[in-house]
Amino acid sequence: MSLDGLMKNLANGDMSAFAGIYEKTKKAVYYTALSILRDFHLAEDVMQSTYLKVINNVNSYRAGTDAAAWIKRISRNEALNLKKKREHEAYVDENQSADVFGTVQPDDYSLLIDLARKILTEDEFEVLILVASAGYKRREVAQLLGMPLSTVTYKLNCATRKMSKALQD
Image 1 (cartoon, helix red, strand yellow):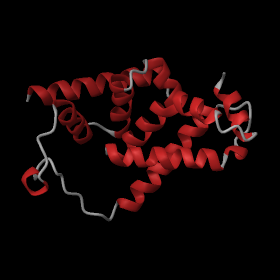
Image 2 (spheres, rainbow, N blue to C red):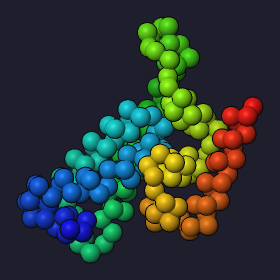
Image 3 (cartoon, one colour):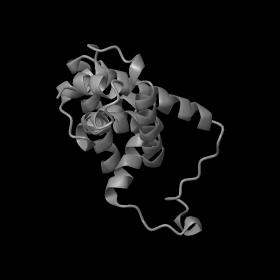
Image 4 (tube, rainbow, N blue to C red):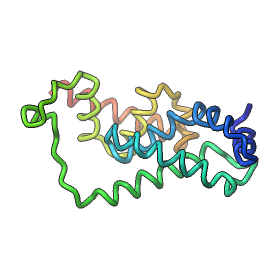
C-alpha cells in the first residue's frame, strides 16, 4: 500500500497502518534528525516525538500530497526545536574524557561519524549520512532533501574529499 493510503487509513482510525508508515519513513526521519542534531540519542528522541506528532496530527495531512515530505518536515522541525532548546547547554565529549564517564573506546564507525560532524557542513553531512549509512541512492536523497541531483552529487563529492583528506592527515 502507498504511504498516502496508509496515512488515509491512520486518519480513519486504523492504528495498524502506523507500522507501514513507520517502515516506509524511519530512515528518512532518523537521518534528517541526525543531520541537524549530530547526536544519535537525540535523533532517536526526535524520531519518537515525530511519530507522536504524526499520530496526533494525521487529520491535518492533506491526502494526495507527499506524505514522506510532510513527515520529514515534522522531523526537521522537531530537530530544529530541540537544537535551539539545547544551544545554551554545555557539551562534554565522553570520548575525550572516557575515564571520567567510565565508557569504553568507541568503534571505528563512531569515530568516522564524529569526524564527519566536525569537518563537514550540515548539508554535506546530511547527504553523506543518507548515502553512506542509510543506503539511499543520490536520486532518492535529491527527492528527500528537495535538491537537484547535481547538487547532491556535488555535496557528496565534497564530503568524500574532505573526509579522505582528514583521514590522510
